[in-house]
Structure formats: structure tokens, C-alpha cells
Amino acid sequence: EDALLPAPQNISILSTNMKHFLTWSPVIVQGETVRYSVEFQGEYEREYVNESWIPICECSLIAATVCNITEDISATVAYNLRVRADIGARRSEWGTLKGFFNRITTSLTPPLMKVIADGYHLLVELEDMGPAFQFCVLYWKKGQESRVQQKVVKEVSSVIHLDTMEAGPDYCVKAQTYVEAINRSSSFSQTQCVRAQGGRSMWL
Amino acid sequence: TAGNKIFHFGSCRISMSVTEIRSGFTAIKANIQARDPVRTLSILSYPHSLHKVKSSDRCCITHHLFNFYVDKVFKHCKTEDSYVNRKISSIANSFLSVKRKLGQCHEQKKCMCGQESTEKFNQILANYEGLNVTSAAIKSLGELDILLDWVE
Image 1 (cartoon, rainbow over the protein chains, first blue to last red):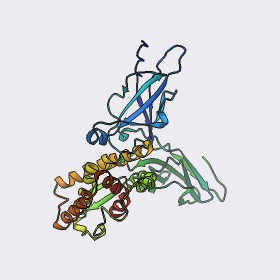
Image 2 (image 1 turned 180 degrees about the vertical axis):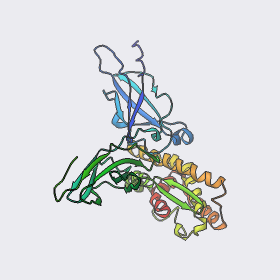
Image 3 (image 1 turned 90 degrees about the vertical axis):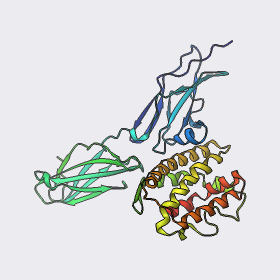
Image 4 (image 1 turned 30 degrees about the vertical axis):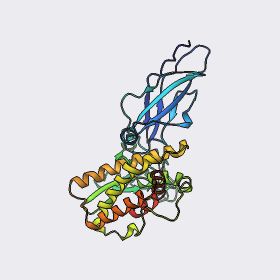
């Protein structure tokens, strides 16, 4: 009788900027292609639907050892996740993530940002990180750190106009992300400073 | 923006990812509404629209309705379509999160129930129980945008 396949081990979540991935160690069987299937269970399923599990069809019988679960982790509640292995008719037990995963624990990185001096106009370009993200942009005249101004950017479209600069002083800018769904912010990006000089862009 | 909003129901303030709920519902709305066998009835809007509820009763009705959907509706909406089931799970888990917050307001006496909201909710329950459970659940799920529009 075929030996039972070992269940996948080292099951863990990689979650950055509200993108969530389940990963696990491969099950090694010489000369065979092992395939994996993933299921999830939200708090609702645990409490109201007899602890039922829901398959993620994009991660059914896949050869990879990673599954993008972002689409299914779409509420700020505790989720359970599990994965099992298959080779033909042989099937392993479920390997289950140790502990729950709640998207509130996602790691938030500072946004990529590019500050532009377009003549006397202070502009900033922000990375589009998806609909869940807002940005808090701080800008000030160098040396006047006590008079920081703030602009909240709710939707990234194109270049954002921050201010009209005077000729001479440097203007500095930094930004952080904010995710309303989990009420958390990233740390601030590196500060970037520019200076207006006539009509020409000046990058420091 | 895409994301949470803070909703004020009198002194009860709760954040809700309405956009996420709505996008989950929009993805399956046509599929769910196509399964609704009884087109001539409404669970939420018969005989009166939710918009007739006094503002002082809004918190209580909202609390009742989120409980109603979590306790009664979603579990009877399982379909043969895995994609639809995943979206229902996403909505249900979001509703559970909001239900808890409303429950806290209720415990803190910030979400009191007047006669009108009690009557309105009893009418909704009567509409629901007038159908067999699967039809009633599918119809209620199909009316989710009525609830979301009213809440927003």
C-alpha cells in the first residue's frame, strides 16, 4: 500500500503592504511531481459555518510552494490556512498554519517617492500601491523644520502639486502610507530636498 | 477613497470597509440575483424602504441588520460556484467585524432601539420567514446593495 504522503511543513505567511502569500516547504518524493492545494477559513466560517474550509481554486493542485491569498484575506479578522500534498491518488494530511493570520499584521514599507522641482513648483510622484493605500506627505523649507506642512493624498493619480517655492531655499519632502482598513501607517520615507531655480529643474 | 469609512450613528462611531464589501458584492451580484426565484418581493424594502427609518433609530436597525446577515443569511447562501463562495466568505467576515463593533456600541448603550426600529426589523424578519430559507437567504444577499446604499 502506498506510503502516506507527508504533510507540507514550515507553513508561513509573507505579508507586505496588504499583499499576503502563503508559503511552505516542498514535499520531496524522488522522481515525482508533488502538487499542493490550499484552503482558508475565516472567523465567520469558524463561528457560524461549522468550521468549514474554503478552497482557493487558483492554488488547487499547483506545483509551486507559494499561494497568493490576498484576494481571500479581505476582512480584518483572524484567518486559518492549510495546505496538503498530492501525487496522483496519494494524498497527505493537511498541514495547517501555526496560529491565525490577521491582515492587521501586514508589514508596511515607506512609499517610493520622487520629488521634482518644476520651475518654482514643488511636485511629488508617489508609487501606486493599490486602492487600500493613502499617503501623508510632509514638506518644509530646510531650516524651518518647525513649520512642516502636510498633505493627505487619498488616491494616487499623477504628479501631486505640493507648493509654489521661493527661489533660493531648499524644500524637503518625506511621505508615509496609511491603510484605513487596518488603521496603520508605514514609517516615513527618506527625505528628499530640491530647490527652485528659474524655470530649470534642480535636483539635489 | 478605497477603504474604510467612519460611520456616525449618533454617539456610536464605527469604521467599516464599505468599499471592500461593495466590491465583493459587485463581483457576485448578477450571479446571486439570477438565483432569486421570487422577484415580486423585497426582504428589506417591503412595505417601507429603509430610508423611512428615523435617524435616531439608525444605529439599532443597522445593528439588527448586520446580526441578521451574519446569523441568518450568509450560511444559507452556499453555491456550487467556488468563486461566489469565496466572495460570500469575504463579505461575511467583513460583516462579522462590523457586527462586533456595533455590538460594543449596543453594550455601551449607544445604539438604543426605539419602537420604530423594532417594528421595522420585525417586518424584515417576517418577510424573510415568509420564504423558504434558501430563497430568503439568496434574496437577502441579493439586496445587499440596498443595505449598503442606505448605510452610506
